[in-house]
Image (cartoon, rainbow, N blue to C red; front, side):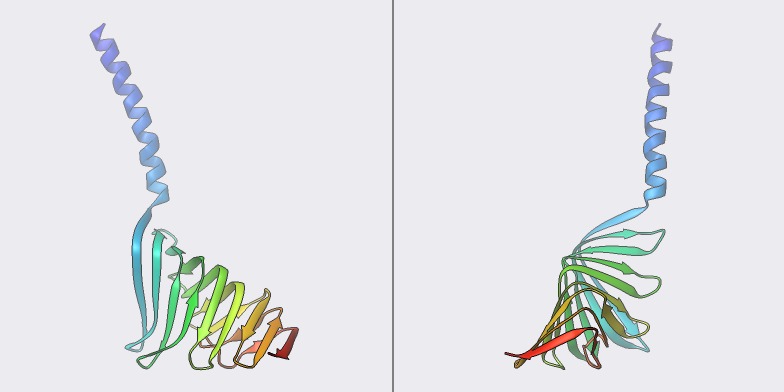
Length: 166
């Protein structure tokens, strides 16, 4: 009788463990608190990323970032700061998607941009959105249905926009 109980116990434990091992094998995510990541181009730092917390999918090399902060750097100076509530960064292709209460502060252009989502392509050195954006300078407010620009918001082009003095 004891042998049968032991065999039943062993089989139940083996089955329950094998499921969690299989699930774990395919998930392969790493969870990180307070992440900092930097990117370099030709020996110079091009951006810094800070996340309150993050999850990295090791198989797809995708980083999900909570409260991302991206600092665009040229030379040794921060030229723009990008903030949002959630970010998805494709580490393999250097592309990012930032959403929810996104704001970009361009220190070079002295303007602030607000949107619900933006895309950033580090290889092409471009940032864009196809959703509503609001851009503020000291003297103007622009509302547009999208934009493209360099990450520091230079060379900005608006789509279907209206600008007024404030």
